Image (cartoon, helix red, strand yellow):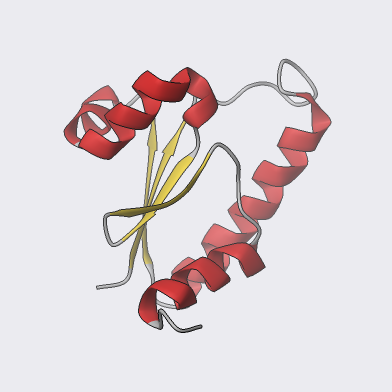
Length: 106
């Protein structure tokens, strides 16, 4: 199974509450998600305001949210295991994290 699950905050407007740096990170991450999807990965994305049940179903996401509130988001999981939270990874970071899960000695 090659599945990436992304738990995200509600999107904000361009250049608004999050600033342009976050917008650029989200754009790069969106490109990474498309790349991973085209490479055969199943990708699921959940937004907290639209899919609260999916957030509650994952005990680790609940724990991170209790600990860090919305700063925990986004939470990115690979095959159910939390890989990263609190920032959008680049394609290189995402691939590196996945490779390290597949080959622990990497």
